Length: 272
Image (cartoon, rainbow, N blue to C red):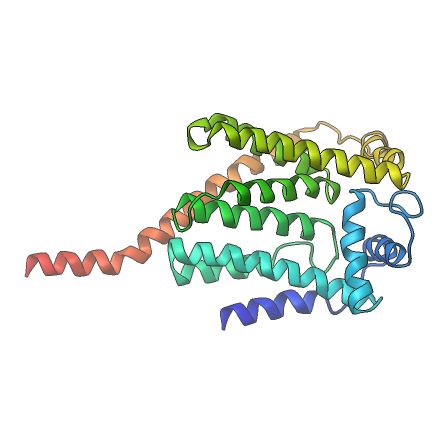
């Protein structure tokens, strides 16, 4: 029931009140690709060309409607939230999982078909697989790890920030060399070289690479105004490290409260 209610909340955000600016940017890009235009050349694609490719394919399959694009985005968010909730249920139980699911349903791009929904789905899928391996629910399959790592790398063409995530991923694998055989790193380097080479080849073949670099890197770094460094700005930055600390403490308190009945029952049993 909680899953259905949360899904309803997410879907309801994507069925009304379109934003002419943000919806227009993503919708026109998806329509452009669906009709044979090139990303970053024939239409603007600030975060990378792959988001409009994925969304354009969805429009080609299900119809060139803004509603289709919005419902496609909502579905990705629901699937991401579902994987997140499943892990929370296995770790903390149904109450906390339900709470996290509703918090997820009330967060996000709030109806906008933003590229972050695709990049989030990629990252959550990778983390879902990683947690299953970490908890020894499945054995570490190097080939599966290689596959998901390359999906994260390609995700950089959805949002450039995923390139940094991939770099962090490589760093982590280097720090835990004892968990991997030497041949794994050879395969990882070869797979990464192949993915980068093929991506560069396709971008060059369709004459997209220069426009992609100019729109996603040069334009973003040179045309966005830097924030003024004020006391209010600095105090606002404090919340970023405090939020995960607060959430960690909050989850620990909920965990302790959920264990109280069991602890009380065990104590009473020992006294009797």
